[in-house]
Image 1 (cartoon, protein in one colour):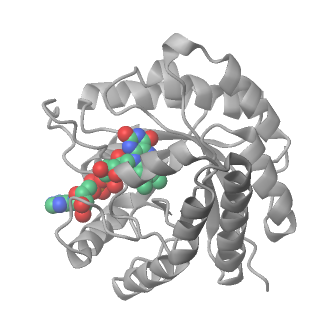
Image 2 (cartoon, helix red, strand yellow):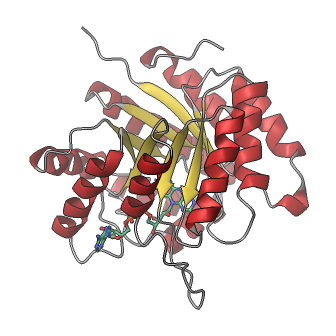
Length: 286
Ligand code: FAD
């Protein structure tokens, strides 16, 4: 039987001061694309998760009828705060969580209830075992890890604590992903691994990315796009989208479990990728 992967989207809640008008309109456009699910990121320490992530997850799940997943970074949360968020998610019927540690923020002391994502996963499994839990993973090794062996060992513990699948950090070199999959197999990490893909569509986005994701390998073909179209935004956008489609086609032919598209809240990007790859994926019945 031919394996058909899923296509899902990630969005992030806007700064509450900016209002939700733009993101609701973007989500409305994305609804027509019938993604397998839409995940909503969560602020690590800046915004109230119930007022941002939970509210948008509610809209996606109950107003648009698309399965939604709430991200939950816990390093700056107490157990009581996480319990409240679980209750809020229960009430709106969203029962899938991407359980995260979250990045450490310089000069901000963590709450110490959740040192690692594994602590959060164990807590949710005890407190609310009916939740489905997804974990994050890093094909190019998490920057806090001394090496990939240590990273994979901790990933194995995280999955054993109760992850039903994993979603990767973005990457531009598919061979890095295939090597990572192999390492996971060797470590008996046998849950589906969904590939996180971010189409690069403008120079600022590329520069921000190069600054924040130092661990990510940029293949020659990808660097050439950034160099050649540095001052030509239209061509950079076209080439960036084509690069992402090329990555996705390769991953799908290698039987990837799914593609999670980092949409950056841009419905045109989601639309382009969706149309270019439509028949490769299964779609939700919206
Ligand atoms: P963990 O799994 O806890 O791992 C963090 C580091 O600790 C790794 O190096 C790991 O090897 C190591 N480690 C784990 N357990 C142990 C142990 N017992 N002893 C020693 N070392 C250990 N951030 C947000 O703030 N909001 C979001 O919405 C968000 N969404 C994300 C979605 C995806 C798909 C990904 C890949 C990342 C996302 N992030 C988000 C970023 C994430 O919070 C950071 O990358 C963070 O630094 C690590 O989170 P984690 O859950 O992967 O951490």
